[in-house]
Image 1 (tube, rainbow, N blue to C red):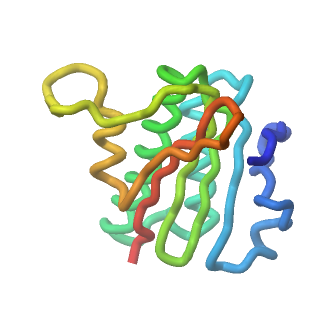
Image 2 (tube, helix red, strand yellow):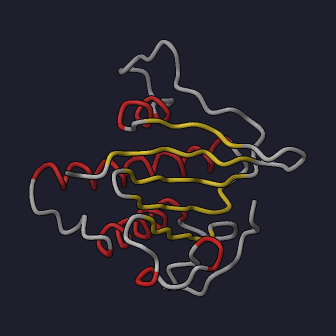
Length: 163
């Protein structure tokens, strides 16, 4: 697992493995990373960062209803995963968004030891606790990745790229 690096405001972050600018990375795999550790207004910052990545990758502005819905789903999943890290995992350290040919992957690195899970049974009228249920419903897959003998985890989710 890599360490969190701080980026100046407006910087879109590093490419994994220091591969360089997004334009030099093959179109089938591009990543953006945002350090969140000591930031304020983390959830809106994460959404803005994700929105800019979607714009750069051609998802926004959306050409039609399906593309617009796909982009909104990504922004909602980013909000839910970052919010969960704020509420239940001692805060998020980093947001990563990866674009592959058919999938977009969102990863939130946090310091928490807990295990996220959808509330079961889900009760739509009950306040709170809907975040992971929403992630589960919108995503192709999601999960948790831990590194042995290191604190925290990566909560990831994968969404289908718009067709």
